Length: 269
Length: 186
Image (tube, rainbow over all chains, first blue to last red; front, top):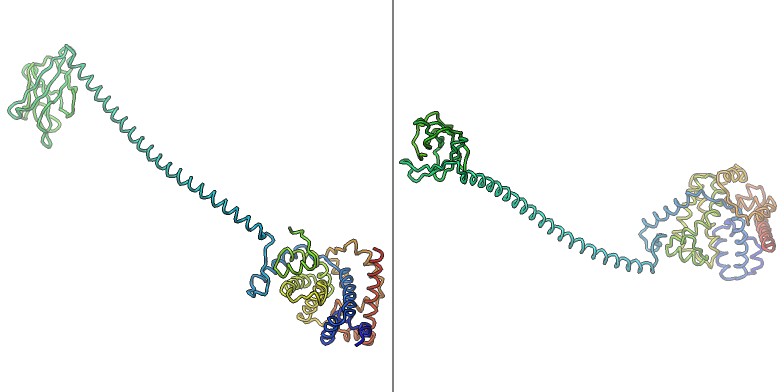
């Protein structure tokens, strides 16, 4: 075959223009590998056609690039064949930055562990402190309550002591009678300002529906001094003028105008 | 990173590796040329955009079959664009031969739809290309951009088949001379 004749036949141009028949195409591809001068001629023809094509360039709309790339990524991801390349993201780190990444991840993990340890430590410590604080608050409340109670008792005792030490008051001891020989009480009475205080040392518990009542004996007649309430210390009762004796009887709850029940203690002035 | 430049060999190798930078570079550097070819063939904006997408998918899928000993990457890419565009017309039932609308008019109207980005370096060249004999340009456009077979071109242009062959060769010779002149001027 004469390569010059082949070149001048126009078949290479047909090939480059895409108008060669399949048979011609095969032939051209075969000869270009066999004859360098045919190959170089075809290269020149294609170069000219490429230049010609470039003259007809039209910039596609700007949005198309993203669409095209997205479509290719979609195609690549749905293709399982190994022959197809796997898309690597533009942002995907290179091999070197991968090792950087693992360095940073180790550092980050380490810092995370340290901070987690501190978090747990302070968390535990904090909850311990919380417990301590609440214990202290409880103790403080209890102390404050007992101080209140003590100071209240102290005020009561100071009050009682003032009465007991007061020379104006007559101390009357009320002794147990037949109904309860062990019973014992005390009345403090001031004849000048007529005040009466009573303290019960010992009395049998009042039965259900019954209550102890204090009486002053004035000119041989009992005058109600009021109902007795339990509790330590002196209890203020009704004022009385010119009493000769005091007695306690067991009456129905709420008391009675005149003593009807048994007398438990009595003392004369 | 995205401004990275590739030589043709690097580009092909990177594409085979599935490198997205390469894909992006490919698009940036070849899409206008491919789109120009496609627009010339399919004559509709929507179709041209669809075809361009299809072309890039084909390039991506077939990059392994590209053999540089058989030709330049550019030629290979343009051929994929041409073939895909022509196939899309056949699929849609167009008869290539019955495209009555004049090529110049259609391209003119489509060019208006796009911001045709002509490289300043190409302007002088374009005027040189316009110096081609009209019958040469017409034949090359029919064969190259519209996918006519030589027989179809002969029938369409009402010239003998032998004339198609010699005229095609003469047209490309003229193109080569133009480009040689251009390179010498440079």
